[in-house]
Length: 274
Image 1: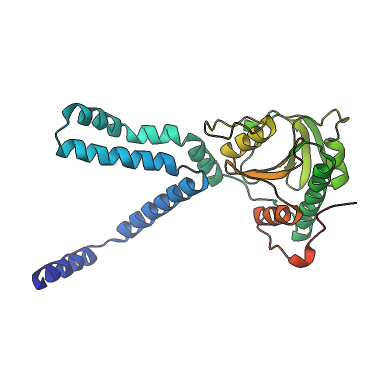
Image 2: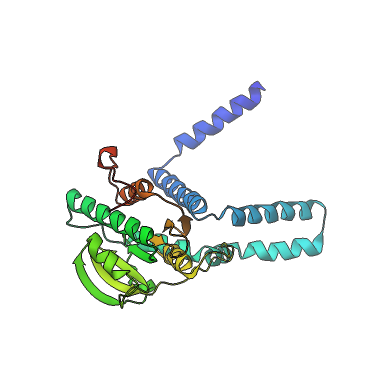
């Protein structure tokens, strides 16, 4: 036991004595990469995929031990192309992460008061639309441009006001179909067509509006507020996940968090609007 401990100490001393500053940078980069992979798995519900890969890894080890030559050959070919398989499986997440690296700052040039105003106007409009049973999709662009992923509708370029958002999604409005895009604190356009989700395990009861909201957030870091015309429920799609049945307070908390602002209970609004 003492001999083993002595050997371990000597090994550590050897590593420390021969450690270069490049090795430190190497370790930091590896740690960042592993950390980002863990975040992707947690955020995008990819645990089942990772569990499946881990299970195949266990089977591969057992096939070697038990000399299952045919099964071992198949798994060997599979794992020899593992990098390409991972790129294919996580292509949306990888594309979103790479776009995030070269993205622009959120709400450049806006003050905290202006950002708070935008949040309050969106929350007020959304809850009013839900109360009236009007369906809606409100896209809040963050750092990754959504232009590549949606079909632009009618240009508006206006200040964000609850009255304007309500009028956009009124059933008699010519631009009520599709989504309204909020960019840099302004209503950039309306009647935008969003891509549908490619997730094969989504609840089949989800309608087209919710699938469109999820589809855009699978490709970008945008947040999409969804108002269901049938149930009058309010939901938020972000990172390919849907948070449903939000009240006014929960909605505002999510919006404040999205814009990296501190939510204050003193600013709480009523859950219904006159």
